[in-house]
Image 1: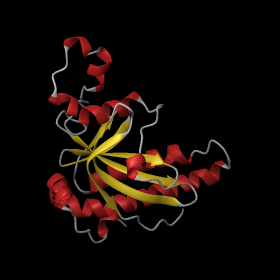
Image 2 (image 1 turned 135 degrees about the horizontal axis):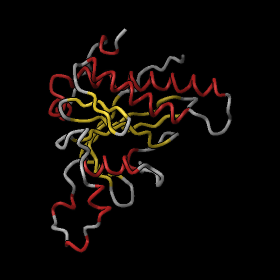
Image 3 (image 1 turned 30 degrees about the vertical axis):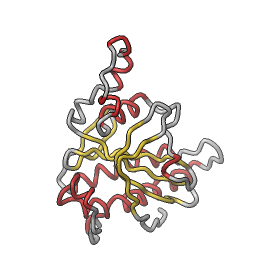
Image 4 (image 1 turned 90 degrees about the vertical axis):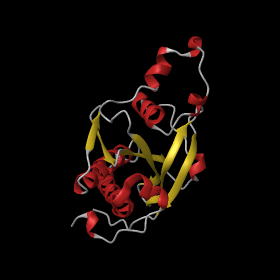
Length: 208
C-alpha cells in the first residue's frame, strides 16, 4: 500500500507556497515515511544484538532519505543524487532530513554536530534560505577558499533549489518523538535560526 493512499492533510499556506498541489499529500506522507524508517532501523538494531554502537542511527538516517525519495517518485517529482545520497525534490525544494536528538528536545536546541560532514554544512549554507551574510559585502580579504566552497551550490541538486529541513527526534525504543519542517539558517555556532517552522504529527509506528 502506498503512503499516498491515505487522506492528505490540510496544508499550511507556507507549505502550499513551496510544494503547490503536492503540499497536502506530502505533509501526510512525511510522518508515515519516518515511522517506516524507524521500524526498519529498529529491526536492524535487534538483528545486530549490540548494546553499544548500535546501527540504529545510521540505518534510520539512510532509511528516512530513501523513503522520502520514494515519496517524491510516487508524486512524479524528481530525486537528485548528491555524493551517493538521494534527496527528494518537490517543486524545486529539496527535503533535508536530520535527527537532531536521541531524546525529546525543543527545536530551538537543535545543533549540527561538530563531526557533521562537509556535505551537510555545504548543503545548509548553499541551499538554505538567503544568507544574512549576503546583506553585507564581504571584504575580499575575508573571503577564504573554505568560505567559497561552503557557499557553492551542488549542481546535482540544482543551483536554484532550496532546502526544506525535516528535523526530528527519535530513539530505538520510543521511535519518533516529534517532527518539524521549515527553513533555517545554519549559524556559525552550528545552531539554527528558523525563518519558518511547523510541527507535523507523528504517525503510528508498527515495528517490523
